[in-house]
Image 1 (cartoon, one colour):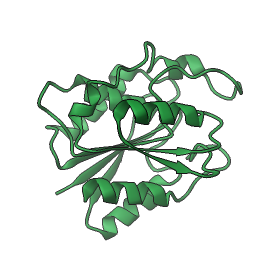
Image 2 (cartoon, one colour):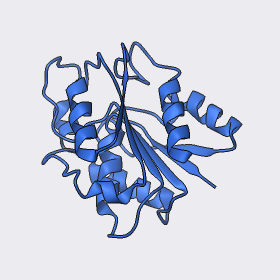
Image 3 (cartoon, one colour):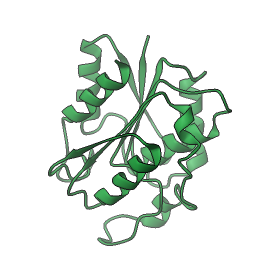
Length: 193
């Protein structure tokens, strides 16, 4: 049975924003989904987040689908990077994610804490072999993580990029809060097949 593990972002919460809606829609299709509580979301440490993913997933298999939003995306990428050769998951969905340091253009967030997850930048070359399918979703007017980060990441991962016009950052905690993300549901349906 397929199981979707959702990893929230910086200052995020497991049941904020669009996560409850997505889990409800997946439940209607008899797909199990859980949103993981990441430790210290206001002062995150990548090794601690990866441990939570490892513990929750258990043995990686084709039944496991990972979804990372914002800072959850590099956490998922680090988890994949940690897998031994030959082990993989069924799919990965990266929403508003990034794999290299962000530049401080709007002073709204503490970039030192966030950039600790991607300094040095994550080498995506080897990560592709640890997931059967990968999809990237990104808002065209994301002011937290510019769209160019998604373009570069999807190129390096050689995966599908879904551009959501006016999508912003699909925030779960700050205005405007996003309460539904149909593109994420469609992408997961495509990944699961």
